[in-house]
Structure formats: C-alpha cells, structure tokens
Length: 300
Image 1 (tube, rainbow, N blue to C red):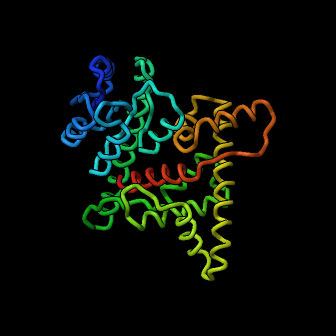
Image 2: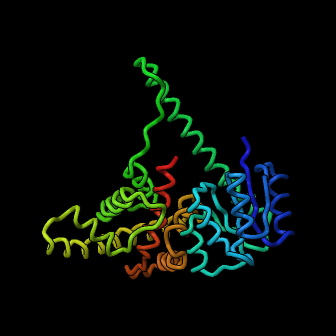
C-alpha cells in the first residue's frame, strides 16, 4: 500500500515540485497541500497522512509550531522539514519537535527522493514487524485453543536498550540511569514534555537511595554518569561517521540526539589524532528526543 503525503509550504512552486517528485517517482500519493500552518493543521487532521512535508518558515506560524500543535492533537504522521535555513540551533529545535529528516532548499530532486526512500523503508520495516508480532500472537492463541490476542506492548527497557546499543553506549553505567529516567517519565503519562533535568535526577536518585543526604549525592553522580555515557555515544557515532558518512546509524542518530557541530568537532579531533577527551553534550536535548522516540515506540 503506497504512503500518503501532505505538503505544507507557502511557496506554490515548491509544493508543485515536491508533488511531482513524490508521484513521478512512485514514492506515494499526495492527498492534499496547504500554504500555511493553520490550514495545514486542518488538512492533516482531516487526511491523516503517513508523511508530512512541512516548510519551516511560513507567514502565519512556523513549521515547528505547526508540528507541536498537531502532535498535541494526537497526530501520528511522520514529519520532514523543508527550509533554506541551516542555522544549527534551528535545525536542532526542529529535530526536537519530532521531525524525521531535514530537506534543504532550493529543492533537489535527488535529495528529496533519497530522504523519502529512507522513510519508505522505515515504514515498510515497521509494518513488517507489526505483522509478525500480530501473526505470532494469533498462532500462540490457536496453539492453546485461546482466542487470538494482540501482541503485548514493549516495555520501556525493550524500546530504549536497542537505541542505546546502536549509539554504542549500552555498556556505560549511565545507560542504567537513562532507562530509569525514561521509566519514570513513562509512568507520568505526559504527552511529550519532560520535567526539568534536576527534577529527573532527583526522581531517579530516589529510586536508588532513601536517605536524603545520599539522594543529594546520588543526583550529582547521575549527572556525571549521564555525561560520560553521552560522550561515549557521541564519540562512537563520530568514529562511524569518519569511516562511513552514509552509515544509517550515523545519519539517523548523530543529528537527532546530538548537536551536530559537536559531532563534527569530535570527528576532526579523531581524524587529526588529537583527542582531548573533552566532549560537550546536551543532556536535555538527548533525553527529550529519546522520550519522543519512547512515546512513539509504546504507541505502535
């Protein structure tokens, strides 16, 4: 079944070009277009497309605000951001809002096809895995003479561990803290936002210690362990990027979980053989992105 697309961009020529690329390449079907964020929200909630191509800068509201508004209303479409802005902070903010990929303007047919093929592959794999789980659930029910049942939802640990493994940080002691924090966040049943870092550290520390003085000491230890774990993940991804810039792990995790400028700096350090051991990591960004992936994984 082909994927459905919506395009939200105030540039009519860009909308037409993207629609031609999608449909002429057999990537899917464009079920609607809009030229502004507010019209885009109405269109997307009505059509419920698989993929949304969203312009970053629009007259009424920017693409990030539009995506956040859609997610708050239960939209589960995948988002691809389109923009000629290459500001690192803006790109990071876009990824934190939940986008899958970033396409630069002026629009390049090869780049658009490459990005959308990757999303198609990810969708196909997700559907295939869901079908396997459903089939296994039915077979298990038939084996014991029971009615078919839906496959159980994955636990927080089952969702988070593979992500940490892919970034090469599962062996770090901080990975245990990350899983604990995500379990606590999932228990709160919020819609995507996380409490402040200090509060998260205190909540996690309270699960390890009971004496107030020990909890305070554990808060500092948790932050140190997280920094070491994230530094290990960033360094591992930088090493992968040096060997193979097109590696799927590097392409996906490096810009999504880390400030890409820091990844580039680490890559230069490794290439020049002058590793300082100092790595700047954004713990808040990392946990926010991981939390969004956790929510998505639990809703599958």
